[in-house]
Length: 276
Image (tube, rainbow, N blue to C red; front, side, top):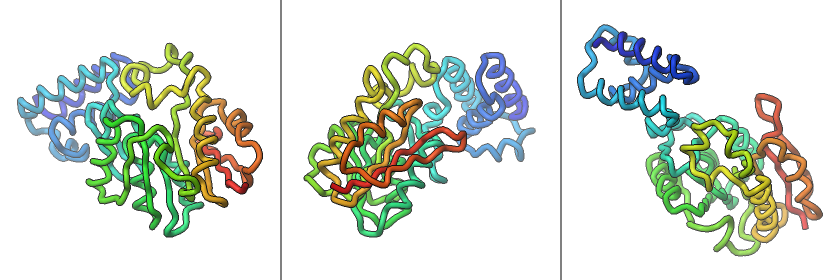
C-alpha cells in the first residue's frame, strides 16, 4: 500500500469512528509508525509503506478508535514549543496551561526559588527552569509520574530538582518565592460525563480533586501560607467554575489577587501575593 492510500484509509476509519480531527490524527499516527515527522508524508506520498510500519499503523489506529489519546500512542506532546514525553502515568499537558506559565514568568525574578506542585510530566517545572534563572523544585505524589518528569528534564537539559511528596511536604517554612500548580480540580461526581479519552486513560490522581473538585485548592492555599516567603506568589490553574470558590479561600494575608483568562475568555489562572 502506498503512503497516500494508507493515509486516506486511516482518515476514513477515524472519521467513521467519530474521532475528532481525523486527517490530522491519521497523519500523526502514520508519521509515528514510520518514525518520521508529518511533513515526510507529503514528500513521499507515492512510496510503498513498509510492512512493519503498516502493522504499527494498524495497531495505532485501533488504539485510537478505542479511545486511547493520540499523545499516549505517540508518547509525545508539545508544550511551550518543546517536546515532552507523556505516558498514562501523567496528565497530558494542555495548551491552556501555557497561560499559567506566562503568569508565572511575569512574577519570577532571577535567583528566586520556584516550586511546582503536582508536576506530572514536568512540563511546568522544566519550562520555567529553561525560561528563567530561578532555582526550580517540583513535587508529585506519584513516583511513576516523577520518573517521566525526570526523563523530560534530562532530555531537555533543565536544572530541576524533583521530590516525591504530597503537595509541599519536606519543604521548610518560608523557603519558596513562587509556588505554581496545576492541581487536580475535576469533581469526582463529573467522572461519568468526562470524555472517554480523559476518563478511561488519564491518571485519576491527576484529574480528580475530591467530591467537589475544590479540596486540593484548599489544601494548597493552606500549605502555601507556610512555605511562601513574605512577598512570595501563589499561582494556580483554575478549573471550570472554581474561580470564586478558590478566591474565597485566600482570606487575609493575600494581596494583589488577579485572575487571567484563557483564549476562550474563561478564568484560567489565579495569582495572589502573600503579605502576612
